[in-house]
Length: 457
Ligand SMILES: [Zn+2]
Image (cartoon, rainbow, N blue to C red):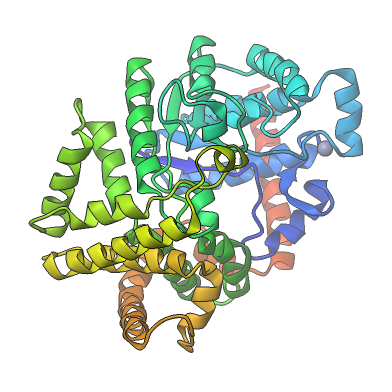
């Protein structure tokens, strides 16, 4: 896959400028859903998409987002439209317009597949909704099927996810059977683990391996790895980035990166596995992969690091799992202590990639001390963690200093990459002013289109 851009159906309030478009919200208090029947919505969407496409010449795919749109169809305007058709018709009707627009602009549209299944709605409504969606949605859109829990076609629903009460890869088979082109999205970090700041490389490894195999078997388009590293990622988007992004893009990059980097470093093992599974005809067995990763990534003579990851990978306690196989607290602590000892061994023997080992160890220790990531992050500057020994505090201080140094590199790269896209504009223009500008652009665009139409007739 050459390049994917987009994801714009949900207007995230990265810097509060979404206030300028509050009148387009489906629900006055919810910023994550835009009204599909408001006439300005499609105009705004087209404008944003045009800007993104223009900023990424040669782009082949455009991800239009559209996931978790749980508020859709709730505003009075949509209620009226819904009464004449159905919620699925509302969603598919709007999405089809976007699909047609994007296809006409020479990019291949892609959308998150959960909205074909109604996401979190009650099962009875979902089956009716899904039937209508499957009947009406254009096959010109590529379905982006995210599944971070399945480890095989027979994964029981209880092991999978509190979100999707279905068996492994069921969405995938329904999508391909219905004639959609599919790209699969496994996860190199477990979304629910990230909420409790734990790593579960075993689940991710199995999810990636099985998903890639299933995608190949069904002749799907490809695979995109996803990464949900820590709760801090969410925190960064919703709080810190919003507060700094009015100032300077460099600062935004700093905050974003300082939050994301620890999680990223701790997940190279599974990110590499995604690459191997996507690009290789015959991915290695786990034992072979562990040896190869230790040798190629760390320059290490043994598998201490993958072994430590395996010990630290403790399944999350879903209600179903709690009844069946909950690991006692004492055993968890034992495993995490052993994992940390192995990490230190790996750190000593690694010839490169030591950041990865250090940050992974950090996660293991945070998990051991049952700390919230935010709590850890807030305490990192004053370094006042009563539960940690002096030696560990010194290591954390070292990590903090090292992180600071690397932030400079990231800042340079990040601002260079995003220079022409939106960050610089985003931080320069306050939202009131932006609203005015956007309106002018909308008018100009419409006048241009009207002229063209006039010229043709
Ligand atoms: Zn509406």
